[in-house]
Length: 296
Image (tube, rainbow, N blue to C red; front, side, top):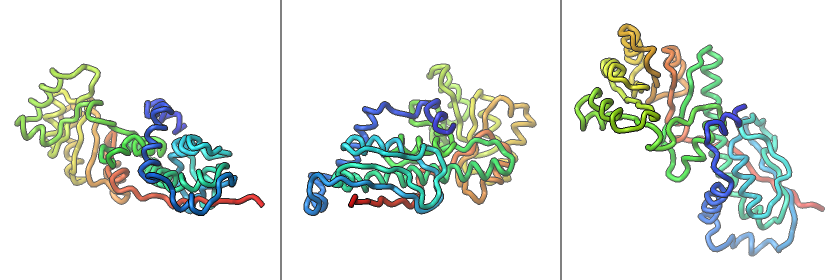
């Protein structure tokens, strides 16, 4: 399942660390107290509340919001699974507990669920688009995430069925255009990287031309990123790699300017990976609302 895939890829922090993150988010919103709720709502009123989908979506952030509610003493009665598809009007999560606690946590819970589900939904939509066209290219995220939210953004991509790519600079070598500009050549950059890092680290090279793609492959790169190349130029790079007998030696990633409209044009080139920055840098949150039910 998609949820299992997320655990397999290791993107699940221990609950204690997750709780710390979530309490920081709550602290940002609550400050020294929810003056509205504390002014209006007496202590000890028990209510039930449901977070309801207003549009079709892929749920992501259910685990995180469950931990958040439980941290403030609110019981989670039922919820959908992370990674599952949800219809308009369906409850994503139902909780029961103190009205003050639920209302104080409401906005933080909704913000996280709306953002993560928006990312997961967009990821799933792209993947469905290329699978329905008969391609098995992997859709990946990038490091273009809001500071402080990378774990949540990457986890949402995984729950949508995508690949998280690097979570940070320490995970793999990715030689970019500015590294090459300083060193002077792709070959020199790959050589230095190979001699400096563990054999366990993959070496990826971002290239701007088909010729650089060939140079990177000849130099021993594991992965070649065709960056911001128009479809015709990316196609030429793939053809050159094949003509030189190098295509089988490398994974090819296409990145830069990928949209829902043009993703199939790039998928037709049969790269191994298409990475899409907009999944996390231009998030369209899904529409959710929290509805409180007061028992008679």
